[in-house]
Length: 342
Image (cartoon, rainbow, N blue to C red; front, side, top):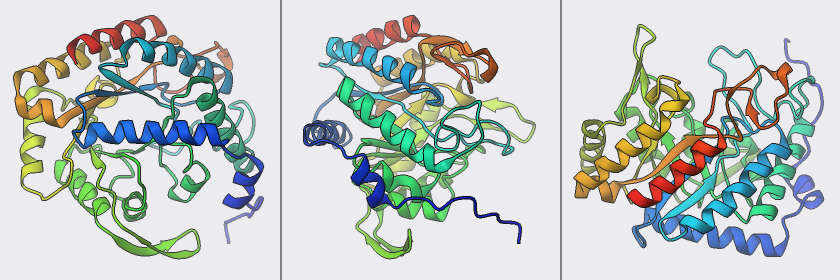
């Protein structure tokens, strides 16, 4: 047998008892959940901006970044809801490379997933405590969600996970907004099938239990661009693509049909500095169409303290060690500009 059982993972109860969320933070998180859900339910006309580093690899700069976002949130609170992107798992196309803090609490050290679970919960709690901004994370491993369930206000399913049955069924049991990205092929039907599956109730096996879910009506689509058979990136944020997805929604009986646009990845051809231009084009598209204004409700932006990316060995504080990101100054300006468009 090729499995080597390295260490037993602590139970959810153990972790939550040792690292509890305080009552005051629970109230803050609940209010944030309600505010974010209200955007998808069209109970207010605010715009969501899910923004932060490609991967949250170091607690101190991540928390500094989120605290800066909190000050910016006060400026734009009438128009924008900022959701910090604190992604603690990093999917790898070939399986090689840094896989996120959940795997490696310290990128220069060997994987330790017990310490990783503790590290990501500690970081999320600290970020919430210091900023009062509950965050988004990507669900790479569905079984890990209960360790952060009481903290997260938004969950994303990545392009490589969106066709996975367990991801779809797990999202059906969440009560926070959850975005399904289009697969790397760009197939809209795959993404729509995923949203439909997650909005339905299910019975399945989850973390050693037979469970029932009621369906998650706040599940929606995220456009992140595509990659064709020749390896070329194909954007899907242009006006025509947004209209095409809006029309696809009309063919299905889905609740709260919502589109979020990821401004990086294949949409930017991995050119992080194109994100402001892409974001503004999406906002202009909303202005040109009543349908798009009601359906395009947010953006995803990759941003950190220092622009670009670095090798792990370089150790520049607040600079991405995975995909390159916008720096703070450009991010701050972009958020202010988006508030004007919104």
